Length: 80
Image (cartoon, rainbow, N blue to C red; front, side, top):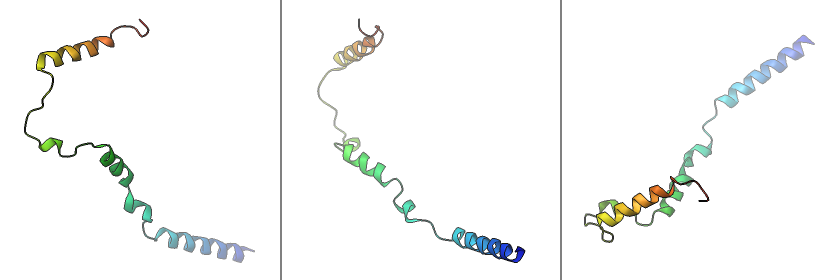
């Protein structure tokens, strides 16, 4: 009985050591690809950082008032 048990233990140990030496699964080759794809699909104009001409639209004072009123909207209690 002990000989059979010893054979089972040795076989299990050899099998586990063999499985531990296998290569990395193919999962890691594409790790993070879905995040990069999502970021690329959400970017409207990827070259915007290289644009050197100034933006057109609201002047500084109007933009400042818009930001202030946006921040003030969060100071009041909800539903008021």
